Image (cartoon, rainbow, N blue to C red; front, side):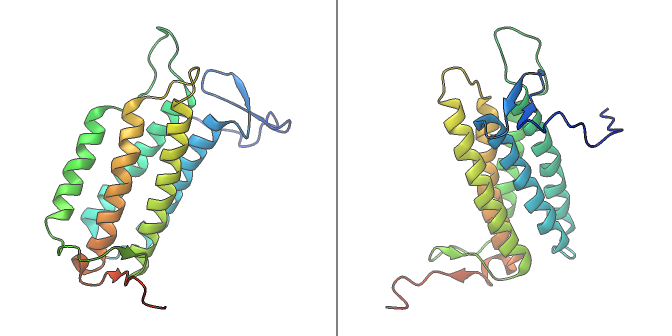
Length: 190
């Protein structure tokens, strides 16, 4: 259990923050940016949940995802180093659950005939916002993983890749299973 008795510590006043290992890094460090952007994704999903209305199954799904995103942030905050004790890590089973959720949502959707513009219902628009933040987090994680001294759990990257897909499919689900999608019309305003 995490206990936070004091919110401010003043330890970050010098422009650094601590990883889970206690190592201090500049706040602009790519690893900090990675888990900070995962946190932004989580916050955007929280806004989505305010607009779901009676979509209880999707709300429960997004609640599980929010918890997973805290796990993912913890995974990124504690880089795996040569044989040291394992900490909380994302698992392939979490990615597989997202895939099952995507398949379940996608079964109900009308086929796509064009690219979808962010919009429709407020929940759909916010799901698109969460999707784009999720994609940014994924790009940062992939860039971090490309550095030889910055290990990133592959399951964490896979999770963010699937999550952006789930957020897209969920946006269509809350847009009357695709009937309320706002579709791109190429060259419409020429």
